[in-house]
Structure formats: C-alpha cells, structure tokens
Picture 1: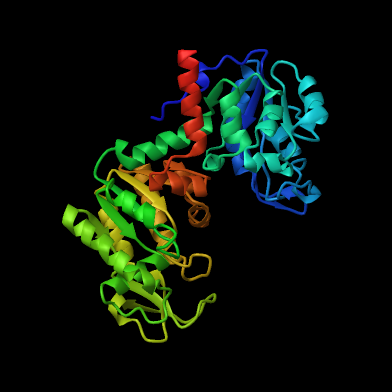
Picture 2 (picture 1 turned 180 degrees about the vertical axis):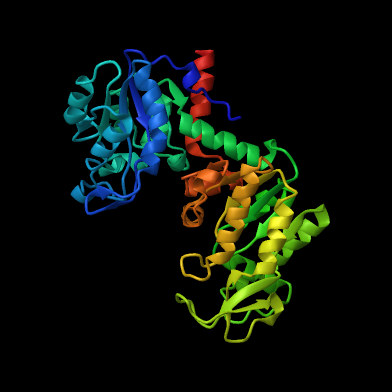
Length: 405
C-alpha cells in the first residue's frame, strides 16, 4: 500500500478540514444527471462530519481556463450533495478570499460547505504558491479524496498537501488498494483485459501490464493493429500501421518471457459503423477488403471467458468493440456479464476503470457486480502505466514530514 496517512490517523473534531473531491459530474441544463462521484465522496465527507470536523469540500468542474464561467458553477451540486448527505450544505461563492472565509466561518462542528469551482482561478492548474496559500488559509487539515484528479500537480492536489497535515480519504484509499492488488498484490493467476480504439494511447499500459500479469487480453480497435502485425489482413478496420513493429515487439517480448497474449480469433464485421447495419461473423483472417472489424465474435468471447475462469484477478480497461453502436456491443456485454458471474461466485476479483470502461459496464448492467469499478480516467491509466501520480507523491511526502516533525 502507498505510504500515506489515512482517516484512521486524522483527528478532525473542531478543525477545518479541506477535502479535495471530484465533483466534475455530468450535468445538463443546470442539473446533475449522474451523481455517482458525489455518492462515492460522501463516505469520506460523512465520516469527517460524524467525527466533528468542519468539512470544506473543494472541487473543479469543467475547463473554464482560469475564468469565472457561470455555466461551470458548482452551485447545482449543492442540492444533490444535501440529498446524499442528509444535511444542509453551505455554498461559498468563491474558493478563496472573503466569500470563501465567510462560508467556512459559518460552519460548526459536523457541518459541511462546498466552495466554488477551483478552476475559476488560473492559479489552480498552475499550482501557483499564492493561490495554494490562499486555499490553505481556510483549513487546518487536508484530505485528498480525488484519486481521479491526482495525476495533476495542481494547487488543490499537490500544493495543499505541502502546506497542511495531509491524509488520504476513503475513496482514494480504496482506489489505490484495488489497483495495487490488481498490479501484483493479488492472487494468481492474474489477467488484464485492455481494449479501446488505439494502441498508441495505451502502449505504456500494455508494456507495464505484460510484466505484471499472467495473461493479457487485447480487444477493441487496438487488437486490429496486433492482428495486422501478425500478417492478418484486417480490411478497412481501424489499424495503426505505423505501430506494427511496436506491436510485433510486444508479442515477441511476451513469447520470450512466457507471457500470454490473447487476441481475437473471430470478429463481427460490417462495411460501415451504424446501428443495426448488416453484419457477418468471420474468422479474423476472413475480413473482406471493404469490411471493418467492429466487435469480437462469439468464439473469441468463449475463449476469453474460458481463460478468465481459471484466473483469480482481473484488471479491465477499455471496451472490446464499438459498444456505443448496436449490435457491436454484444462482445463487451457478454464478457462483462460473465466476469460479473465469476465475481459473484467468489472465483474472480474484478477491478475496472476508465471512462469508456465504466460506460460499457454500465451499459451491460454490471457495475455493481464487479469487485471495484474506478470512476477515474487519466489517473487510472497513468497508475496502471506505472507512473507516479503527483497527488499520491504529495501525500507520501506529507506523511514523512508528519512522522519526522
């Protein structure tokens, strides 16, 4: 486990606790349309409130580029947060200065406030020392519960952890624990399923996972590049031909180290990507010159499920086909439901993450049936690439200072 302090080490009673959350939630016409991130953050907020902390939630929303944009205000989050917490929420019209101080001063022990969008100030994304100082003046303690933003060295992520006693919230703690288990601390054999459109966006992920898991399943559009690297004619399918040598090198490395890479053996093809278009199921070497591979076929689904049935741990990132367009969602849905069954039977620990992945699993109706599903996107990918996340590094350094100080 990463070397940071958690809420088990935190004494919040009567103290102002700045909690970095991620309330960058889907919104339409000024109303929150998916409260998942708010509901997950509530665990930490509620615990701090129950322990008598004066809780101050900090978040970004959208990309206002350092300017105040009314359409990107966090005010619409307030009624949703009040419903989730079952408590009134004080709203601060700014995240620094007099409006923020006034909101924080209204809090008693066990109360909570939400301050306005951090990114209304250019100092947030620049990790400007003066902006970080202004935030730190509002609190006595700092809690980072925004794993999904911890790959950014922003003032509310890295700067605050340098200025205040700093702790990991329950959501961040759970995310890191799940990922660390999937990347080597869990029961073997272990598997990783990596899909999505392009190899280029996940090269580092593939290379890191190849060294950490027993079997690597490659699907989605990126599998086409690997098939082409093996000499398969993939027709008009999405294929990064400039990366064929790289794909071959990954396959060669797997062969040399005893790693197992599962590629599709059959595919669902069509001449265009649109709903309910005419399709064929063919072996991967049977793709016509005008056809595109748009999903894995039933033989590939069976092959993946059979292999995962003998594994104890799975890390999933990316869909196996163009799941947004039926009928090319079938492969992803069938594998996702099989993984959910294995998980429910206690045979597999399933950890998934990434924006498209969460959407695909939600489409399959299995999000709640996986062991853990991360709502993080970029942070999830960077973690499984093996990169250091600035937010986690800042928490670890804070822990060292607090132990020696």
